[in-house]
Length: 492
Ligand SMILES: Cc1cc2nc3c(=O)[nH]c(=O)nc-3n(C[C@H](O)[C@H](O)[C@H](O)COP(=O)(O)OP(=O)(O)OC[C@H]3O[C@@H](n4cnc5c(N)ncnc54)[C@H](O)[C@@H]3O)c2cc1C
Ligand code: FES
Image 1 (cartoon, rainbow, N blue to C red):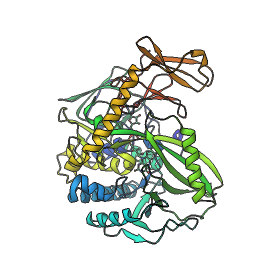
Image 2: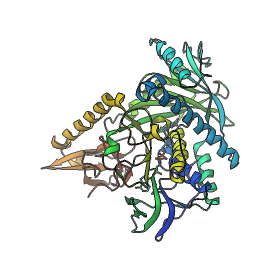
Image 3: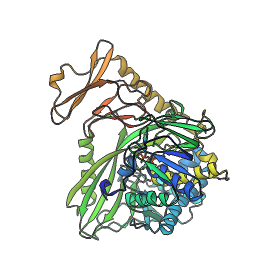
Image 4: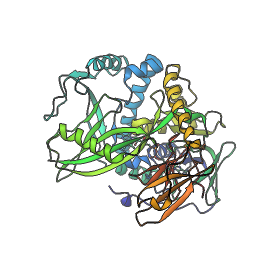
């Protein structure tokens, strides 16, 4: 479904107040807002784009409890109880989506299907044995070993089958959820950029137009928090991931969710239309702002796909998006650490943002309504996961290395040499400038210093954006901030 067919909401035009203000109208924000409104709580949602214009628009929408990190790894990081709660909460999230679809009568192509995890050629299937045992210990007793994935065109060898996964059309689902939210007297304002968030009684949310929303609590669901300068951004890293959509003859591959085990891994599923099936294949992830070879990554994805699915007719779609990878495998959902008690965040939702976003809706609405929730400790943004110390150190050393760029020389020499569709960072004495030229030949010039914490942005040719290699802020070629944690534009 094209974004143009999504419902349109007004800009905020004056000061407002509500019991809860949710910032961000992606799956996390809209689910939280809807579940709160269903409890009779008055809620305002603010978003600086149209609704669903963030990463939710780019998702491949596998609804799964077979998470990005293996259950044996989650058990090492969070203990047996933690792995069990992770399995329980992601299964419950899929059930919650199904319940909402039934309650609100939503037509969004939701269907239950199996998921399959397999190893690439040459890799020992031992990892699957470990995973099977850990999944059973986590309470997923229906997970089973099968001799191969049921795709006729390639023999994966042994695989694990995860029953009762699901898929749906995320934009159809969430557009209907937004409408249902209105029915519970919710208010949505779009094209409304939030410039400041302050907890307290009441919480105070300031918008670019100078309007103030006062609220009893605020939920920052901006994918990566725009209100938290530092702490949470040391515990997660932004990665770019790539997707192709290939047409195949109808019925040539059974419906299912398919994943292999390397890091980064490939993720595959099917979307049917009346004429043909679309095979959606993703992977080739890299740290945001640390590679500019998107074209090569699309080609590698296509090569990987054609080798396994010879029935591919043509590549109809290509797109990429950003995922926030937490150092310990699970999202950060709950009270914002070191902040006032009525400020909540949801972030670090990895490639499982559909379920993590739904868990956020359930958990945050429970916290705000003062109800017990057994998942609160597991997802607490203030948690310290001892087993993740190595990953934490590696990610932060990587960030530190990006600051070296700040003092090394700029790469470009002559602005006239910047071709349409390209960008480069120039050094002018101590200053670093980001220069790019659009396809019509117009030159844009900004400071290359990211307004979040001062890293130097890098050009992304495929997206025509400036991406920050430190914590994933992204800016349009005209300097407008597209992704947090930066809350303001590149400086002129
Ligand atoms: C290519 C790709 C494939 C994926 N595949 C899967 C998958 O198969 N299964 C799965 O579970 N997950 C998947 N994910 C992850 C999942 O899509 C995301 O984690 C999820 O959509 C994030 O939702 P969100 O609501 O947190 O953020 P978003 O959808 O990004 O919403 C955040 C919103 O906040 C708004 N915003 C930001 N800053 C401000 C501000 N200052 N003021 C006002 N508004 C602001 C933005 O405009 C945006 O609308 C995938 C992600 C990508 C990129
Ligand atoms: S995103 Fe943190 S410095 Fe750019």
